[in-house]
Figure (spheres, rainbow, N blue to C red):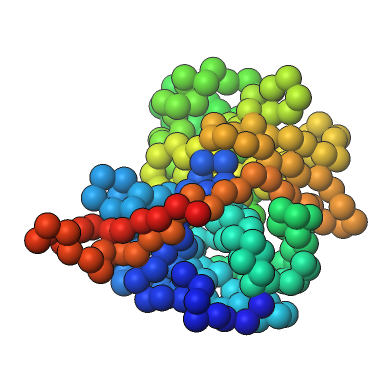
Amino acid sequence: MTSSPSDRIERDDAFDKIEACGNDFVLLAHEPDPKSVAELCDRHHGIGADGIMVLRSVRPELTDLGHLDPDGSHSFCLNGTRAALALLARRGRIAPAGRVRTEGQEFAYRLDPDPILFLPVRDYRPLNWRGGDHLVSGYRVEVGNPQFVILEGMDPNRFRELAPRIRADLAAFPQGTNVTFLRRAEAGWHVQTFERGVETFTKACGTGMYAAALVLFGERGTRRVTFFPEGRGTVEAWLEGDGLAITGSTRHVFSGTWPATEVVAGESQVGEARCG
Ligand SMILES: N[C@@H](CCC[C@H](N)C(=O)O)C(=O)O
């Protein structure tokens, strides 16, 4: 649970690549230079990720994590938090239960063995978004970042067309918004999110599913839901006590150093990676 010099992410140039249902992150042990964030996230010229997770400190009573979107803004991220905690657990760095703080939010977790996060139940309100001839009925939810959740009743192609416009409508959403669409699946809900800060559809969005679960619990009267995001794996959310619990698939993809420390055939490399 205390820092170990042998841990990969303790090196200044070391990173881990982690993902949760295809929402992927570069995990660093230090705050990145703001100028390097976009490049780190770039899928052609960098490591490639939907965001950066920063391991600020690991103490027995509290794990402190940061998150940056590719545009350099700090925002609250649940998939990155789950994936980072899963890797720290695998390395024996965190207790089986504890608290995590990230970007202004603080809540409890438990390892079972995957991290389960315990979050507050938050209010949502219906909102009709209008753009030109389009009217979209959804729900506005503030979960630590802004969310607009559309519960069925929309053609998926129309969602893909309108989500970027909804995200960019600062008159309706002064901080911008993440836009999530829910469609029935056989054993749960298909979920797709256009993410603020990434400015595209990601394979999954944890805070989008948190907001979606709040809407489903309120509107459909259920207490438990399974989400099937675009990426591989599933996410489960349920009501527990007076809060909401959420857990799901995560993976450590690889470790590496960035920028590369080695020179091969006289040319410096962008990065060096190893799996495991
Ligand atoms: N991928 C995240 C959400 C990250 C924050 C979002 N892009 C925003 O700017 O609000 C998640 O899994 O929660």
